[in-house]
Amino acid sequence: MNQDSKNSNVVEGQGIIMRALLQVVALLKSRKFWVELVIMTVGMFVAALGVYFFLIPSKLIVGSITGLSLVLAKLLPFVSVGIVIFIINAVLLVLSFVLIGNEFGAKTVYTALILGPMIDFIGKIFPMSDSMFTIYVGSQAIANPWFDLLCFVLILSASQSILFSINASTGGLDILAKIINKYTGISLGASVTFAGGAICCTAFAINPPYLVLIGLIGTWLNGLILNYFMMGLNVKNRVFIISKDYERIQDYVLNSLCRGVTLHEIIGGYSNQKSMQLEIVLTNEEMSSLMAFLRNEEIDSFCTCDTVSEVRGLWNKGKKPKKIQK
Image (tube, rainbow, N blue to C red):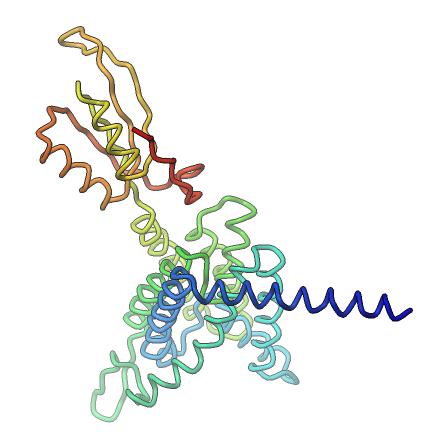
């Protein structure tokens, strides 16, 4: 290799490093990065609360990578639980980068790294040895795993829905669920149920059947509650408006709310007169703004709205229509 080739390779390498540094700087300057960082931190803190206060004291194996690791470590005594967890999570993180994308993978690495320290931090502030639902009768401790299960599933589902909404996850089982969701179209709640149920069934090898059944019920509830939370986060409003002043409404929606409008020519069944109906999909905040506009401008209109649980296509691409030049 001659000197010119070496210099060319050095310059090319420096260019790649500079472009990477510029991308990192641009990312750190963006408001979206810091908002999502706060959301991920809060979401994982919620998950850590559920794990520390309810899952650890109950000793339940709900469908999770930790549960699978416990089973494999029991069946393979020459391998520790920690090593099994590390191997499985490492494989899943690689799959998240390859099959889902760099953004999801990078966010999942962050959430996976902070979960353990958060659990230890909570343990130092609120040390506890038994479940908060344990009842002592004399010197006998009577545990109630059902309460622990319900509280853990509720908190975990809330955390998962927060993270899934920004294309992140709590790691482990959530990565499998996200892969199933992406390549099959099955909802995230159902994906969590399928993946977690399969993992729970492996516990038959080491646990009595009643504990496995409790884990299966918890995994099923996790999927149901996750779907409920996700629908609440993704809910939109489809608004239909009939008005003679439809052009003023159209102008407000396009230029102030920056949303699209579909116009339908209709005929009134009672008046037999032609009119225009506007169809608009809005968030709750945007719909409140539209209703306030109609009220403040005293526009005579007939409005109906219904709830839309999912919106796909241009609405979700983050590219709002260009404002109309007056």
